[in-house]
Amino acid sequence: MLERSRSSVPDRATAEPKIVHQDDHLFVVLKPPGLPTTSPDASEPCLVRWVKSQLPLHKAVHATSRLDGPVSGLVTFALTSPANQHLLEARRAGKYERTYLGITTRDVSFTDREWTWPISIDPSNRKRRIAGPGKGEREALTRCELAARSDCAALLRFKPATGRTHQIRVHAAKGGVPLFGDHAYGGDRRITLSGGSVVTARRVMLHCARVRFPKVTGDGLTELTAAPPADMTGVWVELGGDPCDLRVGL
Image 1 (cartoon, rainbow, N blue to C red):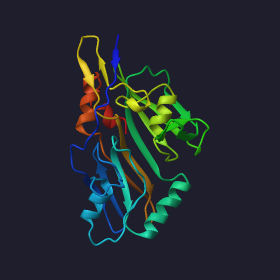
Image 2: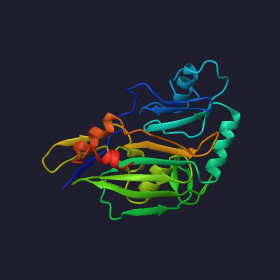
Image 3: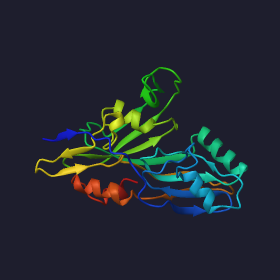
Image 4: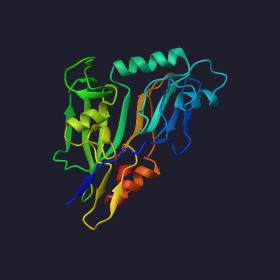
């Protein structure tokens, strides 16, 4: 039996971004949790400003995808307009693939699902989104697979075909498997295990673990992977999961 409670402790970056790949066309970074991809506040740290500080000779960098502040994982930046256009076309053609790993503490009764609810603006809070028709409605598609189980949680693999704001988080909540730590969309922030120990998620347990897309020049694919950071690995282990699941889950 699990006792559930929620908390609103804010998330803050606890690590520096890490460069995963760099060439003449692309710059791929591992974003830590707590660091927003962009920010309108010039005094607030964000990933885009960090990337620009690493590439002072580049006049512009283009973030080809974005991760919510609490989410960790791979973010790809195009360093030239042709590279940016190449990745935009790959996304439109369904050839820009991203794989996320997420933890839920809810019962998972499926091995795979395909969610097609449109994503709309939440009328009660413009910063949030809802699954269903409404203002600003946009079509969305998320594929979800069961990657592993523990006694009290499940590791899910998400493959979004579109990139709407909060898409995976909203679809997971609508599908009955809100992400651990995602109190904004109904997820638990902590649970008490049957033995009495408490497991706390200090951020949304979601990580972009793989990106794959056609090479900017030449044939073949560019594929990059990054295992979840220590905080997410630690939570999965505390929940009874095997840390190897986070690699197999890729």
